[in-house]
Each structure stands twice: as structure tokens, then as C-alpha cells.
Length: 134
Ligand SMILES: C[C@H](O)[C@H](O)[C@H]1CNC2=NC(N)=NC(=O)C2=N1
Image (cartoon, rainbow, N blue to C red; front, side, top):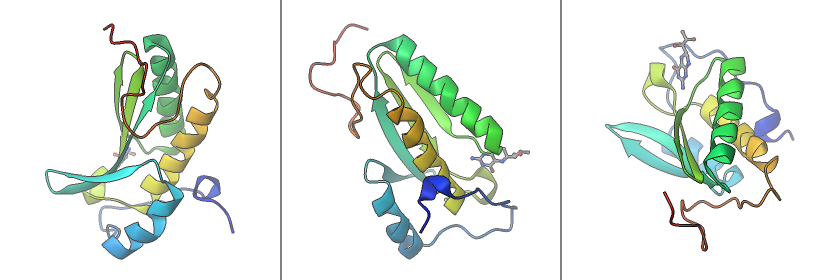
């Protein structure tokens, strides 16, 4: 069985159905660090990644941006000192599609390439010992 990250994104047109709560519940265990949130009635998938500093957070942001461009599917990205928040949803269907879960899994793979570079993968945006300097 292939992992989410190994699966291809599929073409999604404006008439495609959003994932049902049951379908979301089936997929979410593969993304334990991600959370489902609703913004303006739109279900979204979100995770914050912590980094050593702004430069590393920006590098990660750019790598996720390149991934998005390669797939024609784009997240919202918020980059701050030591943190990048990634939010996936499918604009054209105003909700979550399987593609969003695939791209979240691929986002985790990008983050893993920073593992050991003095950072930690955490769901919460603040990891203990994160410098408070702005
Ligand atoms: C024309 C362009 O391919 C479409 O607008 C793509 C661009 N990237 C996208 N990204 C996301 N997350 N949802 C979309 O519906 C979407 N549509």
C-alpha cells in the first residue's frame, strides 16, 4: 500500500466533491502532526513547523513553494522567525480534497530534510527553549 506522499495528485475541477468527515477521519491518522480547522466555513489542514531561525524557516517555505508549483496546488504559507505555518485546502471546491492530504504528507517529507539541523518537528508552534527574540 502506498503512503499518501507516494500518491499522485489528481486533477480536481470545480465540481469535485469535498472530503466527507468520515473520509477525513480515515486520512488524518497518516498526518498525526496536522490539524483540521475551519476558516470562513472552509475546512483546512494546518501544521506549524519550528526552525532554528528565520533563514531556515524561509528556506523551508521556498521548498514547499517549489513543491506547490510543481504540482499546481498551493498552500497558504506564513513564515516568521523560527516558524512556518502551512495550510492546505482546495480553493476551487472550497474545502478539502485528497490532494490536500497528499501535499501535506509531501510537506512533512520536505521538513524531514531539515531534521537534525538544530530544529524539531512539532505540531505546536512553540518548542521549549525557542528564543523569544523577534
Ligand atoms: C489555474 C490554477 O491552476 C488553479 O487556480 C489552481 C492553482 N492552485 C491551487 N491551489 C489550491 N490549493 N487550490 C486550488 O483550487 C488551486 N487551483
